[in-house]
Length: 172
View 1 (cartoon, rainbow, N blue to C red):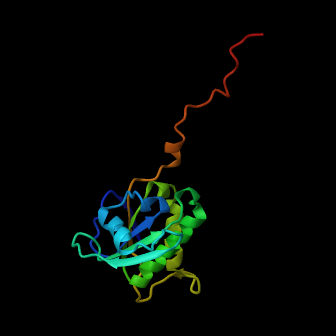
View 2: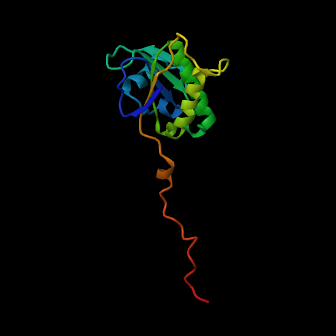
């Protein structure tokens, strides 16, 4: 399986996925066609955790299928919720029988990419055979994340080193 982080949509097939928080219903960082779909065609969508909307797109530059997944409140996002959202995304990709998935990442989800991937990959795993599936059904082969790269541990800890190991400057 290939996993990429890109700045724009390059895949023209597969499934396009938008994880949407409740805060995004008023002001969304996503493209206009996704926010218009939520605002006009599905006014009953409240972005509760694990809610799901489907539609098909007419644009040639984008994948044909689009799914919008509710994530709840951005403040309450945790590793466990991200893993379950990943499982929901993996099940959705499996039910659509697509090999490519393009997932838009919001700033709130950038720190939980690993957990999101764990959820996606665990759905693809067959516990009964204790190996990855090799049957004739289609499973994900490519996952593209659209957005900024997540912060690594070295980027987060660029604070100046403390002076704990230095001796005091005052003399006795």
